[in-house]
Length: 407
Image (cartoon, rainbow, N blue to C red; front, side):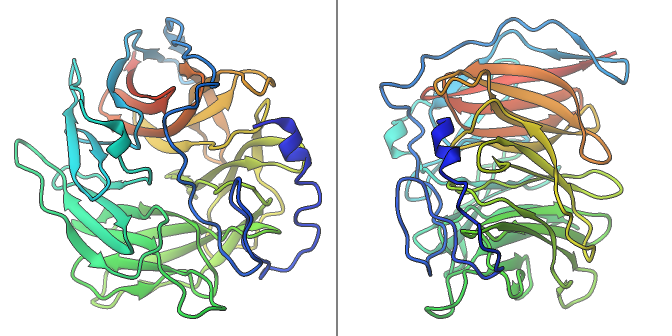
């Protein structure tokens, strides 16, 4: 995004007020009472977009821990531009209407040959496990799930979990063998906020976000029957990052009192949230405006009940991005992040897809470039015993590249 756009944000958020109006969405104005709507950005770039830039051949990179991280020279084209997601046995792409398409992983991943114009433009959440894995999404006000194929078994039929969902990406996780889903529910009244709710297998739906609204969600399975939930309540003046603990050890779901971990600066586009499972505290990853003129990747420890932090740790970007994808993954048994960053300050600069390990306090270690593209709209990553798969949608195609750990 052009630097001038971030300069225009200087006066946004001059007032404080935790109940400020929600943030406007890109290229559209909203009333003071409206919440941010998720962007339905087409994945296929406009004709004026920068041409594709292939990743340079990667040499093994010796990390700070002494072993090497190797990026495969060969990538794989698996589909036209899409919001594809990775699971243990493959790649899943959702079509409008809920049909799921699949491509197998392996030494030579398969391809999905279908009309990209029919692909859904909203993100599908995937809850991964060694047993059953699930795809979860929102369509026409319904929260829907479908079991993903595993060990040769066919995928399950779509099942509606709730009928009060807003068109925001849900978050999903497996805890104690049960599926848990956080989603944004419709407002109870005209002057109310869109609040987050929690659906858990075999339990009643419960309120999650308390008195705060919600726009971006994340769930992280903890030891035992516990979850950590994080969400952004994006508004015009600020975008608080909330956190709460969830206890599923009893018959009744117990949601701890939410607390604010950090007040992110306001943003024009809908912010994305990833959570890295670091110890002693998980790390929230949010790419967005740092102030009126700078942009970067913020990292904030999530400690339920702690006082809000005055600021985050920032990795500065040469320029702004819209969208600015970031995902958390475990690579070689260590928490890591994959994110997109402009190569230079030029508005049409290529985008670099970067892998870095996340340190105990949120520091980013041993950055390695995975690939480049003229534009990147979407990311996902899947942990492997010997590295990770990285999936990205850029320049109208969905690509896969493998990262390997070497002694």
